[in-house]
Length: 137
Image (cartoon, one colour):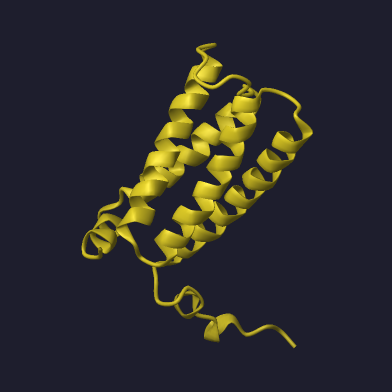
């Protein structure tokens, strides 16, 4: 009794979208949810730098909102995801270089966040993805 994967179709699972968009939305929703929960916990725990705690919470919430926009095929979701990813890259590079943009940004997670954000931006700037979001509102 082996599982027959010949009938499995990622396009039907992803609502006819590119499979990469489906994966991106799932990852962005997951990353956003984790950051929103941790950020909210840090705000209420009043530990660490308040600026970083609020930044983490807002980053998570905006990731969820923009992920929904990408899933819905909205240009604003595409653009918002790019802007957020570029912002994270700048903030984390500054943290690694000991330049303070937001107090309390840890260097330990910076490399992973930079790589992840670069992959997101690179995917969203593929010509087929740009064309997909260019033709919609």
